[in-house]
Length: 158
Image (tube, rainbow, N blue to C red):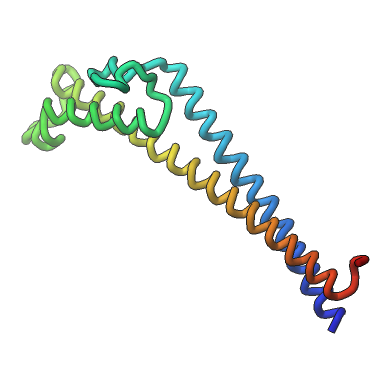
């Protein structure tokens, strides 16, 4: 019976080590990608006020999930002021890159997509960090359980 408990405890400790390594990797990737996103967005130095946002957040640089969401929604509203949809903009015609209205609409779509992609990316980094933190907690719990089982199997000194 002690041999079975010892083997089980070793298996649990191995799972704990794997969970710890995975947790550290997830946490590192989440933090490093969030720092990357924040850094490149700060370099652009675009303030919400540059897009016409007023109020308490107007002077903030777009460098977070919240500010990217506000900016994306603002650009979307501006784009819809030009035309409610791409189909409505063009009617039965094709896109004309020499037409300022078509070009402005397309540029607004690109900027809006960039901002919403940033919102999504910040969300993914948050998920990675949360998952990494959870894996580390599970790893610690597995390690504690593994050591308790080793003690029960009389493998560790009392």
